[in-house]
Length: 317
Length: 245
Image 1 (cartoon, each protein chain N blue to C red):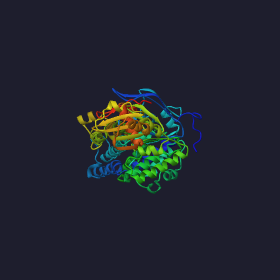
Image 2 (image 1 turned 180 degrees about the vertical axis):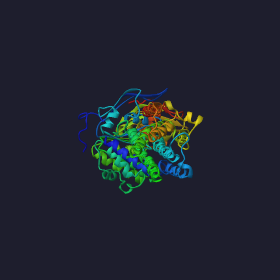
Image 3 (image 1 turned 45 degrees about the vertical axis):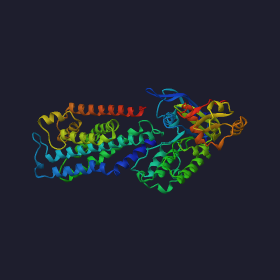
Image 4 (image 1 turned 30 degrees about the vertical axis):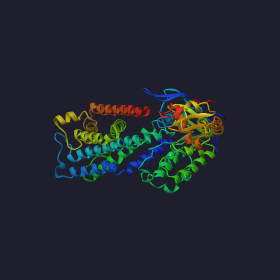
């Protein structure tokens, strides 16, 4: 168990308050507000260029917001890091090539106010067998595990992981998530950015989606799926027009390509019965549940104002 | 503080392991010294002085080693570590903001010790006789004087893109030594140009200490100006790195 998290009980691990970051004319992050309570495992999602990396950089005190405040356990990010609240795993780089893994981690434990024994760090990150190897002699998966070890070299309260499983094979990814779950069970707050949405779906208690620098969704994976529409109904209905289908209940998005209709709905039963009640007899019917991945694609596309082929209906709920 | 010490210890270990650093700081100056000082005419006096060529080269190559150690230990490494995200990673630790630079200064300062000492030992064994006080003073002058190059190395490491560092390093190292009298005693125009450089002044200062000649204040002032200037430049470059974004 982690003890003595400063800031008092109930204080959030991370708070963004109207945070913006502009690079010249580009608004990488725009009025972002969110809160991550202590002890959660949080997935941070967004398409490329959504402002994820910039947000993480600001959370870690590597960049200063143009406006707004970022707080980590009630402190300025850099102060939180100096106090040993935060362990972070960068997406790339950050290793010395001419020292052994053990030497590197020995240093990292000594740079933490509440260090763990090096052997314990090696064990937790599943790299006990490569401790004597130089960092430039490691495979991609091993390198990622060493980066993870850096993030847990001390008894930090928040662990931030930027795309931790990139370049890992399936087996390595499973080993990795086990190690991370063990950290979560120790009571740590975990924030990870990822491209693998099934990971977020399985592991996260809270999912934050940003797009174009703004908060798009913040809730459980189930909440996000509900926001996107739980199911997708697809069928063929020659000659149908968009206007005729618009009044169907629970429709989130509606798309007609040739004779093929695709509907995302928050209640596939109600929507589908209404289609039948209206007297339509669709063919080649498919009803599928959305995964987080499709939900993610759906809400980001919706936010992007839809592309040329799909037309979006306002969420009626 | 434990963090800075731990990082410094690792830095020294890395420098000692690095063959290129060892070559430039110890082997290269020592071999050059042996080649020049071992020749027959090295008992001759340097023109217009009462200093033997052998003693002249002792100081010249000890300063050459010190300059190489101070410069090459850091410039290339800082540039590479900047590029590879190591500095970024360190900023995510409780290491104080200046801890990285402190560890670089400390390790360069320590690596400079053998660079000077080995040329001194070889020189002593080849028949350069000096009083203990002169050995020690000359050592201290070269050692402290090398701080100018340590600061310059840090400024280069932060200010020059990684792929150009090698070139700039060699330019400063070889060019500075050529005009500083590290390779041969200077006279005429070369010497007037060289006098403006820290390579010349640190060598001359140590030489004056040995010959017991008057130590000119202007020489100390020039060396000090370079040290402070390079330190300010290094600090500015360092801060530019920190504030990026």
